[in-house]
Amino acid sequence: MASEPVNIWEMADLVTPFAVRTVATLRIADIVQDGPVPLVEIAKRSEARADPLGRVLRFLVRRGVFTEPEADLFGPNDASRALQSDAPSGSREWLDLDGAVGRADLAFVELIEQIRGHHPAYQAAFGRSFWEDLAHSPHLSDSFDDLMETKSGSLAPAAAASLAWDRFDVVTDVGGGRGLLVAEILERHPGVRGMVVDLAGPAHGAEAHLESRGVRDRAEVVVGSFFDPLPAGSDAYVLCDVLGDWDDEDAVRILTRCAEAAGPEGSVIIIELLPDPDGDFTEMDLRMMIYVGGRMRDLDRTERITAAAGLFVASVTRLDDGHGIIECLPDR
Ligand SMILES: C[S@@+](CC[C@H](N)C(=O)[O-])C[C@H]1O[C@@H](n2cnc3c(N)ncnc32)[C@H](O)[C@@H]1O
Image (tube, protein in one colour):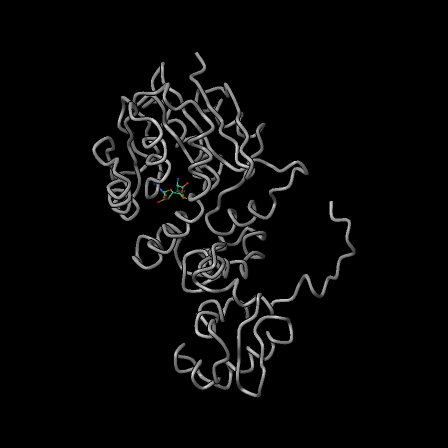
């Protein structure tokens, strides 16, 4: 529960978030990273109009992002450096209004529509679902896969280090994106083989990534949908940050496909964010609802959907970043 006094106006402000996201999209922090640059030059390099851009920058200077040492001359500070493309947090890319997630955030404008039961928010904002949008736009699809790669940069090593993956001969990562987790598991365990199943864009990225990690000879990449039958014969089927994208009905369909492929001896391994000690993952839950009609689940709800797919939760390993590795076995 929040214990600080709440300032409702600050909480409800839309001006600051849009100003920050606009300069992130225009890469203004990159342009001024070496020192103050005249406004006209910033406008030229960001392909923006000087007058409205200057007004946005002056607003942000007042809020502590960028400096204005002289009129119409803008420079960097610690806050603006966090928006540079080379910042380790990747904040610029997450906030980029032309990128998959920054664009999806704009669908929050339609939250009220979704709650009134009129339209799913993303569809109301953009005319088609998030996944359809990615399928229509290589730029959005690449930007989403880039963001997932940033996210997996720390999650994949932690997950690979936290389970005895060498119990398995073959591990299939279902909706495995560019294959970071499979690469990490294969690097650690030379006796394990891997497979990534995903849609065409990320699957092609997985081929390149597995090649670059030197494990391509032990890994197969399959273009396919997890709503269709999955290649059988692996010992473990992993769903990492996948089920949160889907409502319970679709999540059960995906789990059922994994359980069918795993057969009576195989494991289905869910890696998902679990509630933090305060029981709070409500922000991510709303994001999933708005972007893709999905939801976050605590362990009880996860147990219910796994049971509906004929599985039971055999073990849970918690990672420091809030994810849990939930190993499920067939409920015979
Ligand atoms: C949130 S991302 C997670 C990616 C990866 N597992 C990771 O942790 O970085 C969800 C993944 O599900 C994939 N996906 C979405 N719909 C799919 C479908 N019908 N069949 C297979 N993969 C799908 C997306 O392409 C994406 O790679």
